[in-house]
Image (cartoon, rainbow, N blue to C red):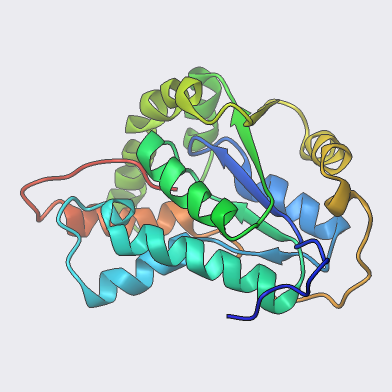
Length: 229
């Protein structure tokens, strides 16, 4: 892996965290529209690849140590190889997993800015109910809806255990205002880099749909645990 040039400061990683329905993907799209040189990296894609290769006993690929390792290594590689800011929309609330992934990033001298979108549970349920995931498949539609709702309590409760340097944002604010706050708090992201617009590693827009697939597969297992994006 190519190391940053001596004396240069690596571009930052902006990790947007929050419960399902909190607006992570929407906020990252807003940030990308203002900083088109940034890369959008959805770690969920790493999980999809692993799921095709190995079994996921709990049904949640975040429980795979290899997933956590690959997520960190790919993030470091994107920063070092492309020298662009990286935007990550991903739910990550297990304290041990947060420490493992963020610790690996920081050990590689990558600047990580962690934002968590706080949204009241009632509002999250309303947003989830207002989404359409599989209009042609009512059964899967309801499956993913219930899956997302079942994780609201855990995601919101876990906020208190996140790292001390986590920035908490009011997820009820408009995406434009949230983007303003992030841009104002991250100097390296605040100044447009002027680099070419790169493709997103993943736009993150298929999260709930893909989780419906994982839920279906996971229901065949004896154990079905939680978390996810």
